[in-house]
Image (cartoon, rainbow, N blue to C red; front, side, top):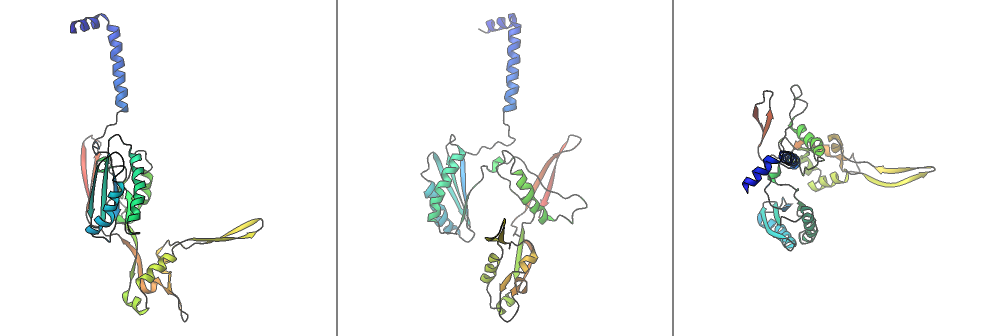
Length: 301
């Protein structure tokens, strides 16, 4: 058999050469269509339900959140595994489907069943959402924002984090194939109101009064319109807070015998940041001009 193949190849060089060219072209085309991952995502076909309840202990999270969600999603077709983790203020329910199940169909089924679970969970107790269509092994790229020399005073870590969350992240989320972008490091910008307890007590107020005033004075409302033929003037009440000065001027209490009591009279309004619980380690793999790769490690405190 092998002898016949060799004899046929020697006698029909043109046909064998043409076959080799076709096979080579087919291989090159297949190579261009092949998806290659530096770190392949070997995770099974799964969807995670993440619930945040900062005020609950582990036992309460398990009883009030994890258990109702598990009962609601248990009878979805093509489930091969259902597991969960309950921690302080956090519940993660992982639903594993068969490999041939479409991930978008699975997420739709979970979204429908979560409506049933929310009826069994006390209102306002937890924030329930589906995890992105990606896992820890699906990370494809890491980057970091740095400041060029001479501009260190203009961009502090808080400004860099705001730039990442509101500009860079929003632009990159529109990239085809990107499921989500996680941000680490920097300081998450917040507007803080440091209330003076002595002034608050002297004015016979409580923190509830502060919260109520902030909610009512940070919204835009609409009303009717004034008809002036041939035009109409729409009436709007614009009250969205944009600066620290706007917060300071919010009225907390009015008195008949004196000027109104403002936020700045009983509290200090300032910029702050969310509490940081750890350290982020970033590695930037780059290629220099000589063709030698090197690793630069940046610690962000």
